[in-house]
Figure 1 (tube, rainbow, N blue to C red):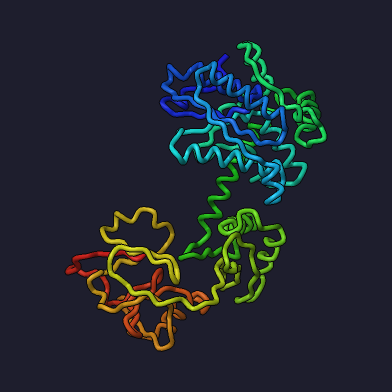
Figure 2 (figure 1 turned 90 degrees about the vertical axis):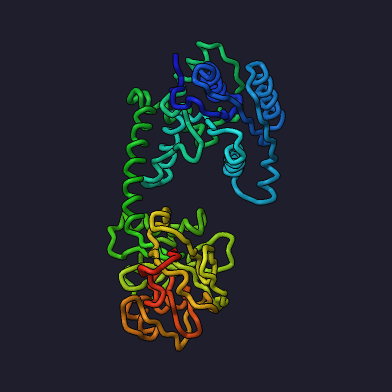
Length: 435
């Protein structure tokens, strides 16, 4: 019986997350049996969470013995999760999961493996879907357990029964987590009572739920892409059209909130943002942020809800050097030198081409000031205030846009337009890009 599609991992360095349970032992064995002919470099990692006392130490000792017998290099990470919960708060299960994922990512980031393989299987997916449906979720929640960022799940198409049959066939040793049989835990109740009932109602229920999760993931990705495509990004802001269909509007807004508060937002925040769709321009709501001293807001401006920072302090004046470099204030932008084909990754930002040698000495990067004037590219001279108003740029945004100026003469409004005097011509030697 072939438990995994080993061909997918040919030539890779794979680190198996080994708990000592039957699922992870079978996964490690499946990789070990094909490692030589597939050119797979195999290793394992065990996380000892310090949660189950002597039993947890027993599991760690078992994993060490097993890997030594099988000739598989093993990394052991010991973390006192109860102590972390006591010091930092949070849910024990969530903190333990965060510790595991942190260890997995460190393996990848340190170049110790190309992939970390976990033993999640079809029943895990089915249990997650049933749990989330009972708690209340949308299509995104149906994505359940997915592969991402070097974390792979080779057993997702296999049921628990198939894995246990493999273990019996190969006579594989393993350890049992005593808490897995405690049905006071919701997931265990779903595992031992709810899912088997579904299997009795319709055979292969778990596999059918996995298929449903895969379809939901495809639809979710498609809808998310539509929402992303409809969102206009300029500098450090996101603009969501108010006339989007509700399903896309909500997705776009959630994506914008996740930029600065991955977990801190609520349905109430989304409800407040939705009210802005019928509000007057200038109406705003405060948004949750994580680990930053500034306030994030959503504000109605014209036909958009704009997600932006509400900076109060005045931006400093910074000398401008007409050469490659990065500026972080009053907003992040860069100067790049070369051909237009070099501009991969500029995204939806408006990229401005300039003649770097046309900027006079003494230019600075700052925000707009009273008395500023500009002679736009192929256009007549006017005050900067009128120019920005004509471009339908709000007063709020115009106050934070970075400009490159010499005295009151504005030579570029980053992300918007350049002055005619710094345009690229046939005599340009150093072509640059503001992006």
